[in-house]
Length: 126
Image (cartoon, rainbow, N blue to C red; front, side, top):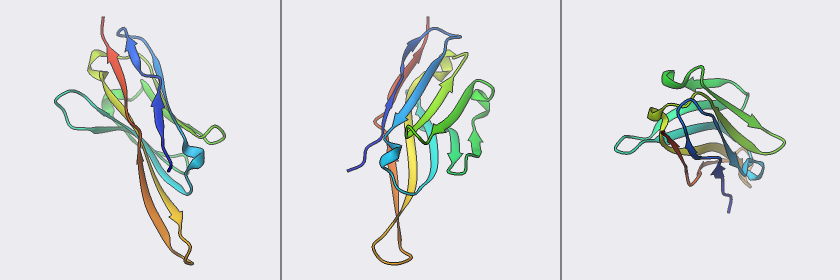
């Protein structure tokens, strides 16, 4: 059983910074796509930033552009989200998402997998 887990959330004052880290990627075979999502109270879950296996940022929410940076450390097996100049509207539960294709026992067969972290709470307030 493969698990990914987030850490780094917590309380921070407006203008502060936090760095979220999703661990466990080294155990996942054939990672194709990675992303950070968040869900604020009473709102739908939304994608904050996405990163392809080739290192291309294919999505960055306009509201966080210039403040958030998504990256992956392949050696450590982490997906990270550096969050600077945090605002109260950034308050949400942040989730790590991984999509992969695992090579099956049969030639040419691949098994899709999705992994979600348990979420980490980010609270921005005075």
